[in-house]
Structure formats: C-alpha cells, structure tokens
Image (cartoon, rainbow, N blue to C red):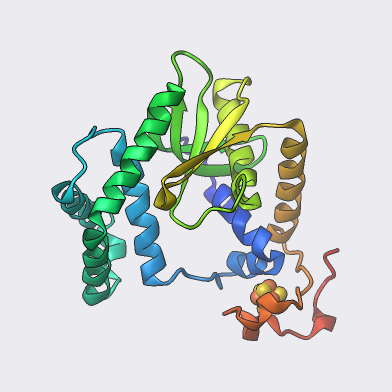
Length: 259
Ligand code: SF4
C-alpha cells in the first residue's frame, strides 16, 4: 500500500448499508458512535464468509470434519475478535453450526455448482481496492473470472435474501466495487453477484449506467456527512428500536439541515 494512503479521507464501501438504513446513523458512525453488531451476528458473518472462501479451495469433501477445521481456522484468523466474545457464546454458535452440518454442506455444494455452471473461477478473496479519484476504498469478498474475461465482483451475505433480485444496499455495494475494480483493471465489467450463502443461492446483478449514477450520487451524499453535515432524523418506526435513539435526540436548532 502507498505510504501516502490516508484511510481517514476515504469513504468505505461497507458504509453504504449504514447510509441506506439511516443517513443520520452514518453521521454517528463518523463520530465514533457506530452500532456494533451483536456477538452472534458477528460470528454468523465471519463463519459464512470463511465458508464461502473455502468452498473454492476444497472440492466435494464437505463434511463435519471440514466444518470443525473451518472453526479452528476462524479462531486463528479472527483471534482478536473471538477473544472479545464470551467463550460460551462462541461454543454455542459452533455447536449449532455443527448440528446443522448436513444442511450447511449441502448449501456449500449448491454454491460450488452454481459457479461451475457459470464457468467462474475464484481469482482473489478479500481484495483491498481503492480509488484516489473517488476517495473510496473497500475489501471485496471475491474477485472471480471466466477465462480471461473481465473480473466479476462478488459479495457474500450471511443474512436472508429478498424474494426476488438483491437488496438495494447489496446492489449499491456491487456498483461501488465495480467502480473500484474498473479503476484498477479498466472497464468492461457488466455483471456482479451477491452470494446469499446461508440460503445457498447466488443472484446476479447487471451493471447498468442508471445504477452507476445512483451510487455516485449516494457517495456524494455520504461525503457531505463525512464533512460534517448532519442529516435530519427519520422519525420513523425504525427510530423506536434504534440503539442510537438517545444520542439522536439533539436540539434541532443546533443542527444544520441536510436536505
Ligand atoms: S433514532 Fe432514527 S433517525 Fe436517529 S439514528 Fe436511529 S434510525 Fe436514524
């Protein structure tokens, strides 16, 4: 990485879902009051990401032993994170996964078969990308390729998938990673994928000019918040269950209007 890389000046692709859930949450995130995922959610994300990475490396020997080995690797790779999680929570999560081992191995097989049918092979996992032009950075879950064709961005999601297509925040993240990949490898990227791994399904995202414009506009809005603009409160049902609710109730007269 270049010595002149100033990470604090860059927007992160991972901040896009925060902005889309509530612009004001992003403001708090930039001011050190982010919403931390609960331990189970964190473990779920880590497990499914590692499962996805390993599907490509070990073919068709997915069994209980493979899942147990995966947990050994997770404990080593994510040592700093795992150490902060109560051991009983980690062991309970591991026990639940191992109990569902047959279903998880079947899911792994479905994902593997999908990429084989598409003729896509993994080129890299967790590739860090950044653009000086857009002051944007992010670590892409997978870069895949079919023969010598353009790279294909893939993001891995451990949560549920929508009835059709992909969630808006996933589409926008694919667009942002496409911009970053094209900065590095040139144009010609016309599709990406969202791997809803816990449901064993991969969904395609067509790269459209319309969505490129939308993500660039979204990044401009995020930049304004990073520069200090304070968005209005949502005043919606989401506020009722938001962990930032107390911090969010600030005298409105003190706030600069965002919209
Ligand atoms: S309380 Fe409402 S407006 Fe404030 S951060 Fe939470 S969701 Fe956003």
